[in-house]
Length: 534
Image (cartoon, rainbow, N blue to C red; front, side, top):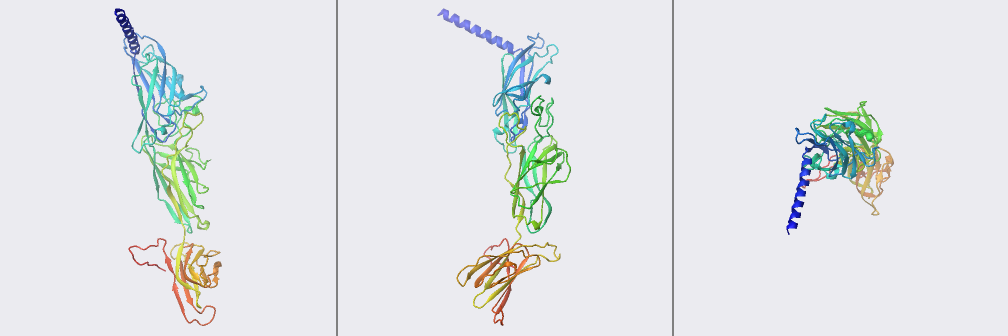
């Protein structure tokens, strides 16, 4: 029993010696860790996260340095995938995130992606602070880590998602960082569409001189929209590029500045659309870079004027890039959408829509050797209507017509859109569809009667129910009922004349009347009787 107690005391003493040794070694340095905690775009798949900084001083600055330098391994784990450029010449799985000691960028160490969410910096040389020419504080800075922030989801406007990295070191006796969690970013919604204002609408039969709708976007936080910048050793920059890394894509610079993608859909045929080559609001300046994948301008090389946007099956895409901005202000800009059409082309009836998102879209969710940085997911809101083309139509009601019991009806429709400038309206040409509601003497309903040529402004469409007439109408013999005429022009007016005297002879009975005009918003409210004009 005494022997057992003696052995236990020996083990306890040995444990205290080991523990004491570890504590003594870790006490050589007093270290703290912090992150730069920058805001990042929730829509981004390759966002530059904040720096991780470890600062160490000698625990006893008056004591002799116990060692000159030592090597440690530092591992960083993220809550999202690492999306830096990879395999760029420094070796498989090497990424262009860098670890810098005491601002010695010439001897920085590249990271190695050891898992989708993990970066290792092995063999980091740590000089003892204050020894010889060493600065009194040894600073270890890890910069240019990119992460797929979209994996955290999209926060609502005004809210954030905190991004924490976990930092571990080995051997911990050399460099102990205490609490390993460090905040390196806050994910925020960064591109907010305010929608379309001044949407353009018009009639297909009336020329539209150039008018403009506007799509307005605003920044979710002040540094969300950036110029491309250049890879450098500068800290705290407000651009897309990271710390210089020879051999990486653009030397660890971003592939492009912040870009916006305007996606158009359902644009009616024969509607002309154009976009300004340069859009400016305060310090924020955008350049139109491409239309439907065809380059139109170099960034900041703005010729002025506008660029036509061709659309196929109603669809088109245009890309704007940030030429200049103010990273210390939340900016907002309205992008004009210029529209026009000619009535001679008879544009299709319909409504065009637009959405806006960042660009480029999609790409890898992981580290990749050639995907663009930054890159994004499509978070465009619901399509916004920016143009609508309405059909030019007048609906005319002839409430009673007949070609029975010896009677016939003559009908006329006048296109009065030609008034020689008296009211300032433009003349409109178009055809008419005649719908016969009722039956003939064989109890059949006649087919629609459609003009074979336009009724031009200032002309009349004239026909007999029994025999047809102008513009290719064939009429509806032996019919009795009412007639609805839908004409593809405004300012149409009608007249009908019923008599038993068509074709010769003296009429015994005759009656004429003005046809009624049915409005586009026909309806009865509160049980009131319908009231139609002529």
